[in-house]
Length: 238
Image (cartoon, one colour):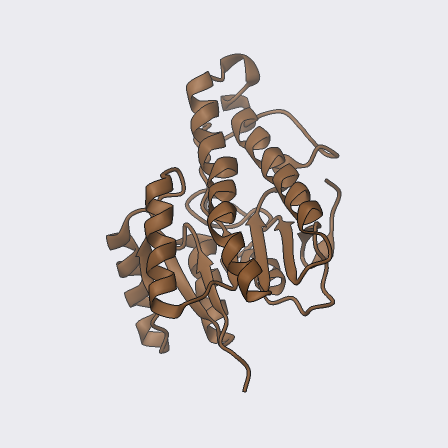
């Protein structure tokens, strides 16, 4: 009988993260809903009860190492393993359009805050979870990045967000290279422009579409890719 995989999804109380929890749960995994505000996480989890889903909820602030340790310990106490990590938590605090946010106007404080959540947050999580995956000889790490972080198509606007996602892409490749041909796969994905609180109501994609590639990467077979950047289950340029 196949073992039930345990997934930890950050920033999962709404939007793409919540949809990832929903779809992974429907797929037979235990998807732990991690939220900085645990009450909001519980509210989100309760909304899934009508669909027969009851994801465990943990408090997790990706900018706080003590919070990460406590969340990982809680999951380990409950299940004794973490097989999948989806680094979904992220912030964008640079206005509603590229014209609202330019390099010359960017404060170092906002740049550091954005980098801390979007790039160092996933680093902290991977450092906490990778030893568990190595011991279990299985792992799937999905870094929710953005086309805004592509050097190949880098444009103007949102400099803090773009830099943080470019750094997350670099972290993905570095980690995959360090792990090499092991049973642990590390990939980044771009969900596209999705109708969420961050993406806004005019975005062209649903949360279901935005989550699809993350689900695929979180459940890759042993022959699946590692160290890649994907959108709609297809490789894209870094």
